[in-house]
Length: 257
Image (cartoon, rainbow, N blue to C red; front, side):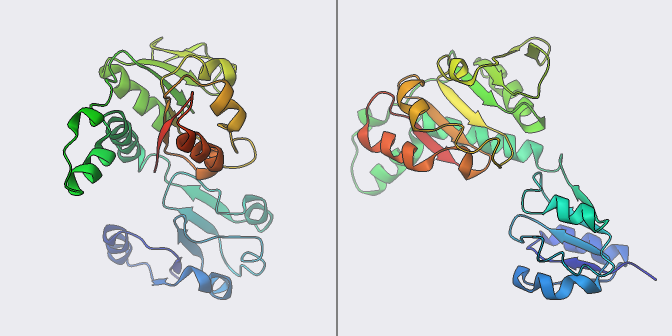
């Protein structure tokens, strides 16, 4: 008997077409129906919208595998899945390039004040001297998390003539990318040396509020550019909003994925 697959999140049409071509029976449901439906299927496909909690996995029936169409698996209760004998997979490399390019696009938009300038011009004004921005070449970029995406961002930033530092407590070597990226072990020391920061780490208690009020107001350089291509909770958003409002040193500008 063919495995039955449950799709409990919005997938691109190419993904659904692939399932159709495989001949594998599948159904697409709203994530809210997941707990009631999961027991009748062998496989589950989700993205970030569906929350596969312990309650959802209470009666998993014949469920054998859960596939996350994305990088992180923080929306899946791994201990519960393991206890039920369910394999959890993700597509770690599928979005590496697109996410890295998005981070760089945000970085350049922020440095050149493109969103603010666009809004300014659309309002009918033309005070162009207020939106000159800053050059990224020669600036120091701090990459938090040197996994696939972080390394991809770093290599492209180097090509843009930026200096790149890395912070990753799980990276054992003193440098990365053939010596082109120096690792800094102390996060506060890392913050004191960078002009731009980009986050590429999972969520959870280990990374929550890495960039907090104390660090924003006491450790960072003035006018730090903040790019968060990870989870929102990695940055204390209320503290960042306060820093932006006060426009005091440091007064970071930020963009979130």
